[in-house]
Image: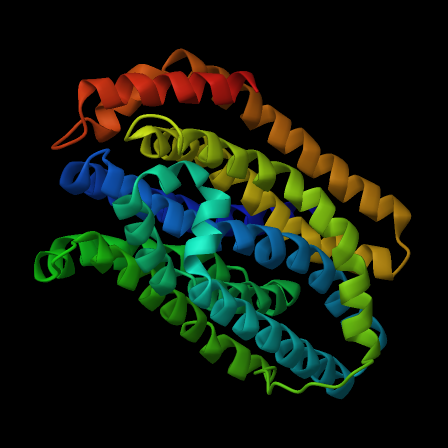
Length: 362
């Protein structure tokens, strides 16, 4: 079992590493072309808001609730019942996300005020952020459905395609910065359209694998569906658990919005570097073991469940502690080597390194 899990972890970790490399290229591109400015702060807030919702409801609480229920249905029911569950989850989730996306676009200025109240003192920055948000907010619709499709594939131990999808976001943003931005009066608008296009591509790329499994969702809505009710019930405590880290990041942005221009950008790039080891290893392990743990729980295999969990904890500890110490000690040199090009100055590197060191202590 541990050999199979390790092989799957390397598959997901390899794809995640590829995504992080492209993410690094994306960040270098953005810092070189746009630097750390009020406009960059506006885009990053407009980008963070749908990502906050995604992590809270999509990849966070929803995946933690959906995958165990899906695994239970796979163990205890035939394929027709499993497909019925997938169809009703797709209908319920899609309807909720569509409503959320429309509301976010309509009330964009109010949403920006909640996430970055400091921008209220700068009417131009607030208006720019709201305009960007109207384009980026539909990303929550696509990316939560991406997490839904990925949950299905992961449950059948098909990890490669879902793990590859983040690469498309980075490619779209890099292409937007180089090839679309020169055609916009406000170049940052090109990045917002890149985010929206990436969400659609990330969803479409998973369709062939779902069709091959015979589990391509056909959205249906039915009040009181037992499986959907169970997922919603499991999501409630998961939302509270997922919200702690996300609210911390939200508060960082809220506070930074009151500080000097560039503060949101400094926090963003230090957080990106902080997430590198977590993304490559931690998320890979969590993605791989969740379907296995869910199946073992459904079979009431307590001993196997404990063995799988202990294996994951040992592996994470083995990598996380040295990575954390290294990032703290080398924060300045790493940030300077990666981002100090073009419009990203030595001062930007200094303040970003202070943020990263503070994150590591926390």
